[in-house]
Length: 556
Image (cartoon, rainbow, N blue to C red):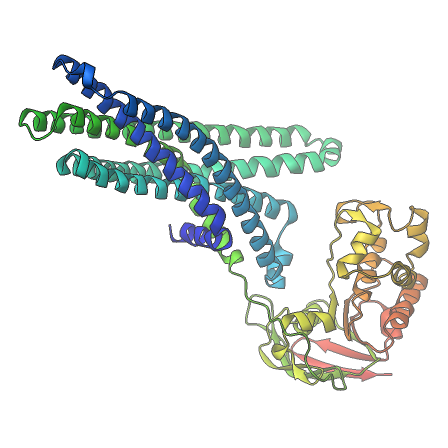
């Protein structure tokens, strides 16, 4: 429940006006409904009593009937406004959650981000956000409006009917609704979790089958994958049927609460009438008001069924929503030479305590290109991540522009340091859109970086900068996609450029031309390359050879 409350508090802070409008109209609808039914019961009973007493001719029927018509029409108008404003509040809440979640994911650690599998992550995030759209609409707003309406009814019945009737109705509904909701939420929590897991398994398997249908057909596994999809769908439906049955049982329990409370209020009213404490019309008012207050219980049935799903989703996304604040500093004064210096640096393997290297020290001067070499597992990629501020430093210090990298504001650090990792992503769109993720630039500048990465003729052949590419660079070869990401990195004009195997998948001639193009675009940048190819080490002015747990410098 704490995670759900945190989510709602976040929504309330961001969308306070929309939430308050929706809550106010939700309360107005319930209060007008209770008033309408209570007044109608009082009016009919009072009119009948006046007729039996021979006072029908002098009984005022006009003002009560006018009030009944006003409440009937007003409730319909309020219901329309309540539906519109609560759904508006829900959509605004979803906007807030999605933007905060995306911002939180973008500030996650690099290790966590690279562990995310695109389809699975998107599937989970979509399901979680879909579940959390009910936090405001189906849980918090109905509960707040219902409790507020019960309090208003308590005060009204206390003065109009009897304190005994008022307390019976209030305590009966609050206690009965609480017990029914608690039982329903407890009974459906595990079922709703299983239903959600089955739904995610079904979507994942279906997407995998669609994407890999050609390979599955070639190797004869299409039928087995289809059966796996059907099995996941059958399990999902089974869990939904069980969840629906539990929801119906919770609804029956809530209906029983209504019957007990309304029947009890009628019985108490009859006793009070017989004792002469109240008139029959006011006993009818208490009974019909108790019946109308059952509207406050209606949302609890759905809320109890979805509670487990919403609670799980809130726990999963809570950490991503609590993103660290980024500094708004514009610049750090001074950028001394050398731009990059490592002093007795010690790194551990990602997620562990095993040392990759110890007391690593070297520097990269302005305009210098340094290649890092070593067998797999010696920490070349991890070293680049640490320099980019994406991997923790176990000991020692990384100095950028005369200041420890930990002292740099995040936004300024990203402006001066650019990393091209081994695994880079391209989104669907035009070539221009893919490049301008680095920031808006002139078209001539786009063609300049494309020429530097030997992509200008390829882009021209495909229709220019407005030509489209598919998701993850579909339509481009591996080397072309890699160079397009490199061109985007060059547009950042960093002072320190970190490249992890930048010429992978390229022939020697193209690789050398690309390296020359990088230096042409960034003549003063300090460039550090995690090199696996001879062409990269030959291009570098100095080589830093890494070995497990220590470092060895070589230069030529």
